[in-house]
Length: 561
Image 1 (cartoon, one colour):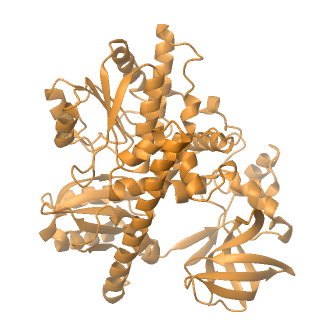
Image 2 (cartoon, rainbow, N blue to C red):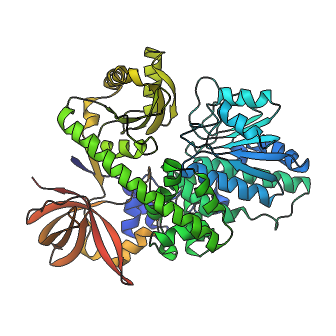
Image 3 (cartoon, helix red, strand yellow):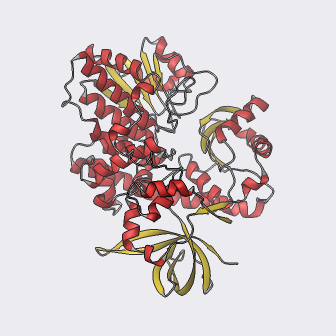
């Protein structure tokens, strides 16, 4: 692994300090391309306006008409955390504005992803007038056609990249659709739905059917923050505003009962919650429902009106998440055993498949293998219908969805369907075509990538002065919004190792020293002792134990040679 320090422009660094920022925070923000003009943009009025989002105003008009005519609206969601939060935001927001609305989320094992003809047939049993998709639909050509043939109005909100053809829906809102000039292309599905609600509120107020006090969409920001962080979209300025405002509500005790219940079971203090808590504790528990069972459980948790009801669903999510962890561990052991024997350093990609793997967990498996080998990875599981479903994760340098598109152009009969983003994608192929896909994907990646991309680079924010290595600094940094595309600060220093011991057979507990100052540290998933003197990349962490809060260094990487 190559260690590389982030750079920044001195004038930007100085300008940020004129905003009242500490030299450390100014340095961190400057290294993340934040300017003195960007930094003040933190409040709701600073959000990009919904009028710039193609289709948002038109969809608001159509939804307003549906509400006025008392049409039945049925939300079709996705089975991940973004889909669950988007469904919950749509349900809560539309109900605030007087809509007759319900939801349906596909069971991934029975219906697969998105608005398929089969889901439309199931939805039709509820006799809706309007189908509103959230976090899906941009690729649902056949599903939209099926819905339109039944006389249903179809509204699509999505953020996934469109194919060459898009569905013939009544209205589409997607910042990534062709012709949309919305400045932020990184809204999550929940963010897109939130924007539609802002436009709808404005439309209803213009019609005189809604008062300013009647609808407080800010009450939905905890859900927007959760979905945005959990879906790993880039935290650009606009998304950071949404996440920052959502975290503020949670810390003030104004979150929905479902999020508070999940945080409680995860042992996280809502008053101290940060973006990492949403990504590492809340999101996975919510996702467990869609991976192993039915995301309806997760949505019901987020829609719960009382702490008691929310806790019942949160406890189900807790059990499912524990089961998911066990399944994941077994699959990871199988995969790593095979790769230890078969993996070659000359490979650009890794494609793995075992018939007995759980299709709800292959995405996590792909992530774990990618972290281990720093290669684009696609893990497949048997879908039970002659097809195998793959979930992929990529590294910087290979746009995964585009790579799959090249595969389909090279061999049109190979991939049955696919979709996704630069860093994550899903696909289906025939079981007998696995080896052919494996070979073709490797060939495509070798054409699209440079060998240098296969060497992992760890970007750090350089060294910290000893006086900056404090609980106060860790607490101040934890209050900022860090995440995808806006990484949490990682520092790099030389330490003496005074004490070390292995915890739980897999984590290393350390006592480190720098310039006569001693620090507690933890190195997760690392059980080998470090040398007495070592260069360490680390993050500052607030460690809470028995009611006390102390500084702890979380080791990210140690240079041992």
